[in-house]
Image (cartoon, rainbow, N blue to C red; front, side, top):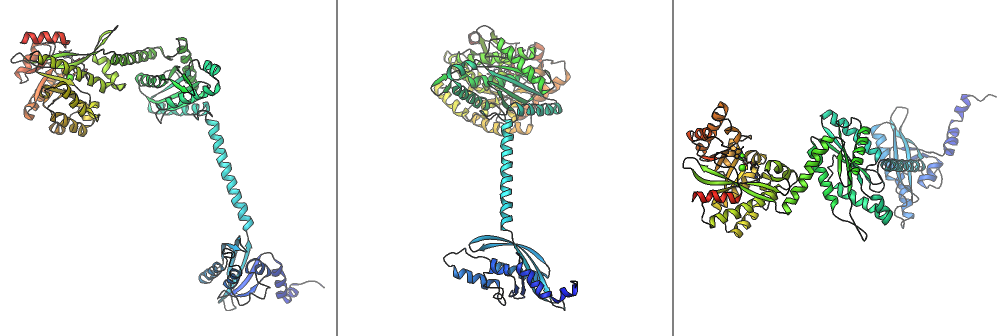
Length: 592
Ligand code: C2E
Ligand code: CA
Ligand code: CA
């Protein structure tokens, strides 16, 4: 006899029972209060801990949960399922739709994850009378999932570490050749776009092989580490220091505009490596040879630049090590001169080769000396007298300008006092100040200490500050200049008319004098623009009640024009160049 659908229908409930009782999934039917109407073997064994499939009928999850907890009071985390299951029943009833949940809690002390499907159960009229549900233990699956995630994360970390290793030097942790070439490539692209230069410095330690051979690799490694540390202090975050291998390093300097910047960097790293390297018990000295190639002048690709920087480095070695060379000859000599001058200038500080010259300032009406400007000179043992235009910018770039000005102030005041004591009438002494000085916190205390030791009369001292320097940080300058003014020192604005000046600030500044710049005087009285500017400055001074002095006056015509227009104070070659203290004494003698 064939097995037909109607046979199946006849056996419907038994069949269902047979199937559900033997399925490994948990199956149940509950009424609206969450009481079981039907539960299969799997839920009885796996979640409820019921004796048999009949026990749950008429009881809810909470009943079984409480029974389990009571039986295992000594284990507070024994069974935490129960209330949670009923909450999701209510969700299904209230929202009147089938839903999927992931529920977890402890069963017999072990964490279990259940994936649960619940749906409303309707009577023939379509009213909800309960819920049906099916649940599956997915604890294993969850575990596999989280293990997998952990493994993936580990793999990611390993890949990152491998990437890092592939791009960095093991010993120094610096970018290696691979990353270096990539960075150089990027720098070139950027420089090309911004029309700038990139400098590539190839650095090779001198005699490093000998260090390794005589002291061992351990000491050699420590030298390399110390070297890296020192150079690193001079590297900007936007630049790159890398180790290509052995004792070869490379530096990429971005945003380069001139040879000057490269020279300054070279002096800095040479300076920072000069001091002894203390490694274990050894005291060693390290020098280096540096080759420089500049994009785009010396090559347009990363590889060409590297090759040419390397060539330049060998040129430096040929020149006798502990030196540097540019791939380009012209740049080489420019940098060479700049670095030579800086080294010499540092020596000048130590050997007291800076001295002060004095240029008379006259009242052209009375022909009286009203004061003098102190101007620094460098007496070089072989190059002779060097003028400030040659070394002031260098001193500024090398961070020596503040000290230079203090030397000039000290020397000028000492000399000035000698003249006073000898009974001469030197008038006012004017001293040039860089704005950097005004940013030094101890400048005022430097002055008060100096004045106390020299027992000076402050009213006869004047500081000259250029307009453009004040305008760099007007608020701060005003504050410090006020303090200086309170000490009794007067202030003159130098090179007036050349910078961008704000009349608003001019009123706030505690100034006593404006010095008309030489560039406006040069073509007087013929150049009409200069005539207008000079006249304007003079009348500005009248209105603001300031003294006005014209500098760089060389001719009688210039002087007469100034006198006619109300400017009597004059400084210039017409009267005298700046002279040394001895010659100034002669001038003062003639005036007594
Ligand atoms: P400055 O302060 O404008 O000084 C005036 C410069 O013009 C001096 O040059 C002076 O010798 C020159 N001069 C004066 N009268 C004439 C003239 O009639 N004709 C010509 N052709 N030149 C004249 P110097 O001494 O070479 O100084 C150049 C600049 O160096 C100064 O310009 C000043 O900015 C700076 N400087 C000089 N000494 C010091 C110093 O001790 N500290 C600082 N921070 N800067 C200084
Ligand atoms: Ca000056
Ligand atoms: Ca000037």
